[in-house]
Length: 100
Image (cartoon, rainbow, N blue to C red; front, side, top):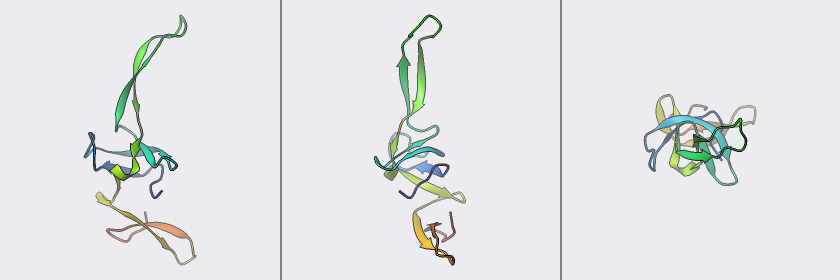
């Protein structure tokens, strides 16, 4: 997976199209990512004891990695890989060729 935790992405498809946020969690096996402030779902919690309250929590749900695109220097771009002078594999922005 080319996306990593902490990357800034924009949603390119779905109900939250156009929203921008930071990746909170990456799930490479399921090919999904959790983006802060995107794909919010409400979950009801039940009171389990006398001290706890019942409430409705808003949590971020996973979104398909194909529905988000990396933002680099204010523009959306695809991600590629290249080896640097030391032989390390680094991510590059396809639009500009800069390291991400």
